[in-house]
Image (cartoon, rainbow, N blue to C red):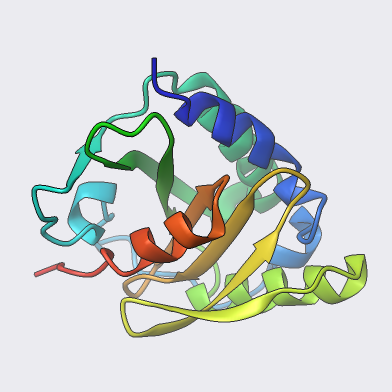
Length: 177
């Protein structure tokens, strides 16, 4: 059985280990227009070679718990989310890709809050470009979490146990039309 659920469960501490909800969510920012299309994870994951496969999460409950924390912190700024997992073909561990569609604020503010959380928690993060956008990559206790803007009103969040696999998956993000 694939271990995406385990990866996500381990990444649940990402909110507290490098990023606090109050840091990644800032109220009072300009709202995204209601007619802004919501992105799905499949839309932000580019075409992948036969070495990879993109699948729905085996166990979505840990993702829902993770996103529930973000949703509670964002309040009305939350619109929706969607998740997929990028696996190297035959691998047991993958990188979770979550697209968070926001109604309040700018995606860049989410990333700035992520970086602010790193500083406050004393976590050594690093820049990571995802789909040509400036993002951040930070360790949590047992995994790595990265985020970057994706579209006008969306943020992509990547979660993986292995930093190299996360960076590899980040390179697969970006074939929206």
